[in-house]
Image (cartoon, rainbow, N blue to C red; front, side, top):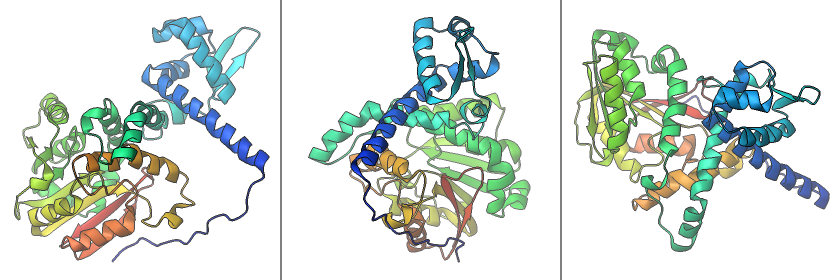
Length: 361
């Protein structure tokens, strides 16, 4: 069964006049520049600094942030003209607009300034990806410095806010976790999600699998800092996972769509589950048909991330190149092909970018 409904959308057929086309392209150009400035402001702490200050001069802002005033002043000019920052010519002070503060600052999931950093990071590899248009193949994970730290931070914000109270209850396993079960996180990255679970459910045991030694080191360090003795991390390409009927709960967080062999990984998950086990797969909330994504506000962003990263790293491993926008319909089909007979799709208000699939044998 499924709770997902497919919506029908009609592509616009009315042509814009040339002036409107130019206006839109200029807005895109300007908004892209604002996105870069927002990314920089998040990375160097300027947005959080502004939020904590009363109206301040560029010198005061730079001093509070520990940054060069000339760069800060030019950045502030861009943020004022973008409408993010208020400017008072009389006393030459700047203030982050109060209505923007919740969406540009802080560690929570509502801070969209982190998303702006994706644009800056995509720009760093755009020329490398452009060459792959000519030659085929794809890039390696090593070509994306900072990309995975950003994804980990974004995921951590959602999980800190929702994992224990909202996401895990979708799987209907809270009581079993309290009693003690075996749990695996496939493609766990830096392991923050499974560490949160290990801390919350000390009677259960947890293992995180990933092929990134650097990410696993972060997970182990966090587990040690929290004094956890019921979680371990193993370096493994999850396409080679050979566990059989070993786990009561398997989790993946945005890990399937960029796998080189996603069908193999899903089959491995199915084999690793015990007969009464549950698989919770978190992945991108989009439709499989292009025409059904026309009304999705961030559809172009998803296709761009796919082109520049997720599809490319799969192709770079000689993989399927499934892509970010594989869609819930393809995801459900592949889950059933992997041997899951019961698949339910949920939405989580705090995380509109993802769909939450609960699958059982």
